[in-house]
Amino acid sequence: MEIEFTKSALHDLKSLPKNIQKRVISVLFRIRNNPRKYSKKLVGTEFYRIRIGDYRIIIQTDDKIYVLRIAHRKNIYKFF
Image 1: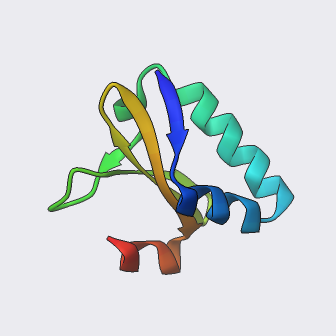
Image 2: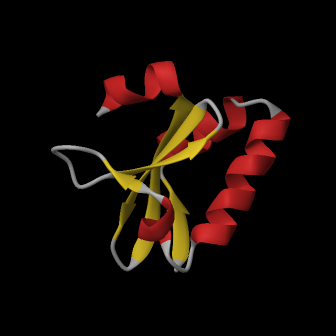
């Protein structure tokens, strides 16, 4: 599957520490063929979350993987 970032997600990614940026890219690359296997559905939404330590990636899947937001776990859920 192709991975597409929203403007917000790109901004989030650039604001993360370099080591977390590398982990995010690595995880997204690994899960691109079967994202639902490695993610958990958010209750009451059509979105999924991926855990990377204390950080969360919120995605939506269709014919592509849409990365919506990336943030620390204490802040991410206020967006959804």
